[in-house]
Image (cartoon, rainbow, N blue to C red; front, side, top):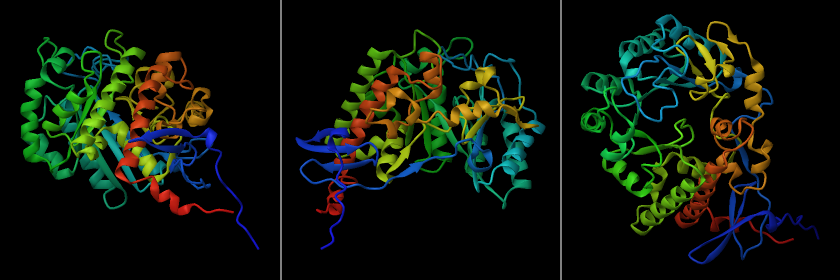
Length: 429
């Protein structure tokens, strides 16, 4: 009689955890969760993001972050872009010709059907007319041939009815920078004269809620030593109407603001408190509003391994006002990472190659980490800040990522999206 091959996993290499006293096992290689009291079987998983050995923009390039101006009307204390200048030529603005060249290069180079183009700064709404010209150019030459989703990352101070109605009509996504409650926000995000910006932004948010589709507001919140109370921060942002929250803590140059390892332990505890508070109140689904949580849970639910932390140097490029190409906006302040220009294409493929090879599997600290294929190896720029190389990791951020990953495993079991159904695949030899 034929028998199936016994493909049971070696549970010793799995991550064990418990939910309400019941033991579970997580397989970091297949991203599956199993009950510990049931036999385990091999299961297939897929790979999220490209597997190309050499980054080829023909297959991988999906969009840009266009730094359309280095000008900014704020002077935030922790700004990685040094007030928008990126430590390069201050006060420069992208020309219409350069912006059009960037769009031409994107369409002519990549075979992708859908692109994401995000306007960045400085403060991009200081050049709102330029944004309109860029959108008009796309609609004139590429509408019907390729699809694009436009976005704007803004500090929110220049939002008005004209801007918001335009964004609504063109379906432009907004990501608004806000650092929590008034006292915390105004301590870091100020006008040039030192005045806080919170009151102005929240007035503009009232208008945004009237002009934009429901559940279409997203915020970017930079976490520092002054606004680490995750639960309070989360609920305040939710009360303001934000349906998505991007928590930034990887790229702060200001040493007095940057989170260190002890701070990350406190921050991780805050995530845990928020998670259990939401679970106890029947609102556990809201935990997915946080960007890093959404990323980890998406990998779990789809069983698609993240081999990289994000798009940096692979699927999206940052474009400076002069048209220079960088791996991402954070590296745009480091001229050594410039790998080309929209006028001539890629001139330093070795830089892109270094990011292509920067997979989580290549990082020694990640090889035994249960969260490796949820996290993807961590932010390359944060790794460079921490240890001088994109090939490393930020030990401080690893503390937080592991805790968030553990909460995501608990979420998956508690919501029934992943867990017991795996037992249906169990068989005995």
